[in-house]
Length: 66
Image 1 (cartoon, rainbow, N blue to C red):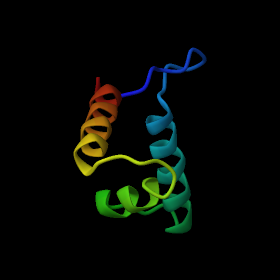
Image 2: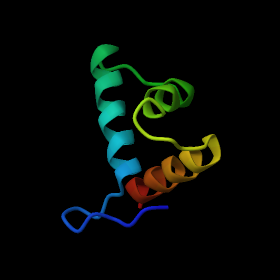
Image 3: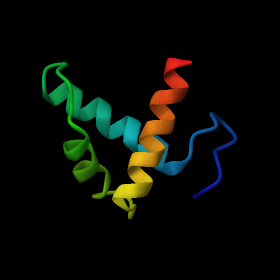
Image 4: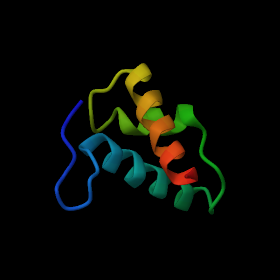
């Protein structure tokens, strides 16, 4: 796993997930985006296993809920 960026504490993978989530939600008129759709979009930009993607996504959601 890569180190967090000093500016905002996000890793490259986290930043790509948020970026692609935003784009997909915008394209879908604000509707939800499935994990499978998001993963398909993310792997176009970074080589990440499904397991690592799900772990990072779960951690990001957990951080948001706290």
